[in-house]
Image 1 (cartoon, rainbow, N blue to C red):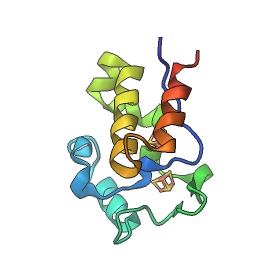
Image 2: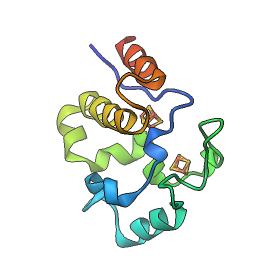
Image 3: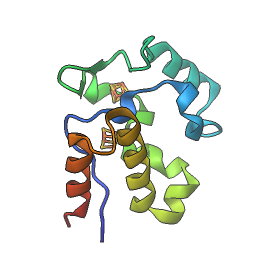
Length: 115
Ligand code: SF4
Ligand code: SF4
C-alpha cells in the first residue's frame, strides 16, 4: 500500500499563486488568503522559497497551511481517502511545476511506494 511522504528539494506546493489553487477556496479564511497573497511573488513562488536549493527558508516557523500533518484535516478528500488524497495532490503539484517526467516526480513516486 502506498504511503504519502514529502520529499526533499521539491517545493512544488510552494508555488502559491491562488489563481491556480481553487482547492483552497472555502478551506482558508480571508485573513489566511491575504497572508498567502502577501507571501506570493510575481512569478507565483512563495517569497520564502529558496529556488536554488528548493527549500523553505522559514521551515520551523512556516504557517499552519504549510504543515501537511495539521492542514490536511481540513480537506474532506483527506478525511475520506487519506494518503491517496495527499499523493494525488502532490502528483498534481509536481506535474504542473516540474513535469510528469521530472526528477522530482520519479523521486516522489519511489518514496510513496516505500513502506
Ligand atoms: S508537492 Fe508534495 S512532495 Fe513536494 S514539497 Fe509539497 S508536500 Fe512535499
Ligand atoms: S512558507 Fe515555506 S513551506 Fe510555506 S509556501 Fe513558503 S516556502 Fe513553502
